[in-house]
Image 1: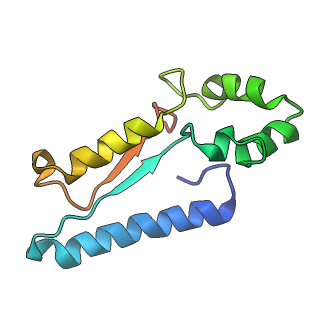
Image 2: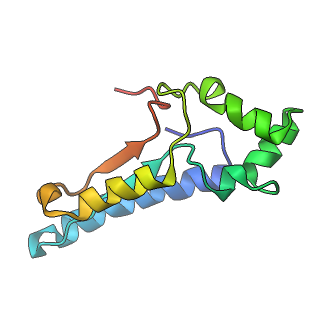
Length: 119
């Protein structure tokens, strides 16, 4: 589902998901598993850096950067009420690399606190 961010980012993300599914099909018979991870708003420099994307969005909205970040969960409809932490994304990736996920391939894992409301 296209986001409100930069169009090039959305197009690249869609292409990455399609590539992941194609690679999973092509190399799955050889025992290679390919999955993609699609994080939502994650507390990285993209959002926290005073010169980053988050700061530019805040400025465009006429808001102070720190105050804007505090309102992001509500404004973006994040069900959990908070921004995803990088360690949570890393933990998901570690799981996907583990034997516990041995039969998972060709999947896209969304980790966004319930921000995207799709079925």
